[in-house]
Image 1 (cartoon, one colour):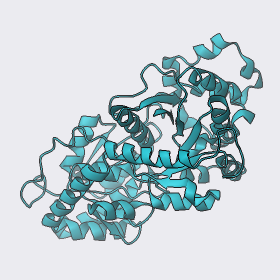
Image 2 (cartoon, one colour):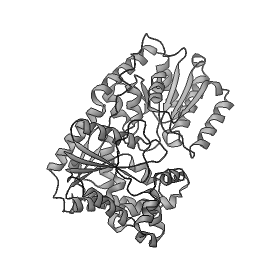
Image 3 (cartoon, one colour):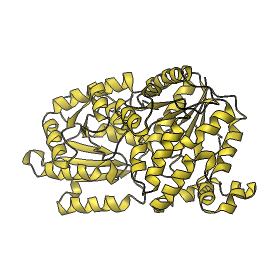
Length: 445
């Protein structure tokens, strides 16, 4: 098949959706499908080989912002627009995104969802023109539903089918101020009728978005996300029946921010350390940490210092892929108790690939993943006390920790690899294409 994947870059920040899309494109190519990765906004920061190649970055972040704010700029000369798309300028812009006002983000989200009727019409036409020079794609994938404004022009301009992945859009949209929140949801429901189908990573998130967007259930398919197992395959099996190090270690690996529940993990750790039987427990925190995250991390360091536990906790921001794999293989159990509507939770699969069991709150799609892998436990509520109680039950039983880790690692190798993900995505793509409308129809679906 000829396929195009459109994925927004997150600049200098690690992004789970970018990791997932990049792994998907790489595996689709390995399986013999001509697949083009088209980046948007800002460069993608990845911990594995990028699949972008020489494809330009469309909807460059600076051009998008200026088109939104300055009506005259929408007809600016091409040389000026090309100049502000310079890689070094986009890299500079990436460092400024944390200072963007919620009002600005809301306006831009609505404009992008309006597509050819929004302020970024010129950027959209530039992308369509470039894609029209490629072999006609069998399908174009949108990384997430925030890109639904592209669907009408992609279908009419390329004569192709358009399929959107669902990847945690809900939490972002619900964080927008009004009236942009309500208008964004309305536009997504409206523009979603122009799609040929949807692919969600869990049944939980598929059902949730069917409800919120009024989607036809038969047009929303499920294909679980997966990861490249490079590096994980080389890890030795957990030996013996004890802990991986001289003392038990609790891990966290995700963006170091409140949404991912890092403060819940820190509070659970402090609670466990107050118990005699866990007096030697250590905490290792890894993951993305940008300038906007640093004040939050500093506050947690102070909290640990006030509890006399500064020496028992370590922070490891922005690790390389090899460092991440080693990190996940060095902890005995991992928890990322996300507060927002997590569509999947790639960090769970990454931990299990390293043979490290997980403890997660019984929210979002975590139950699906844990039941599918047998690689962890669910705690009763998303609170530090509930998390501490479930962690405590496992940390006193290293034999069970090893059993859960072994089950999870085997299941990931069989069902949550990049190869398995690509096969599932292709299967669901063929199903959606076979039952879709003609590319030029925009009626209800």
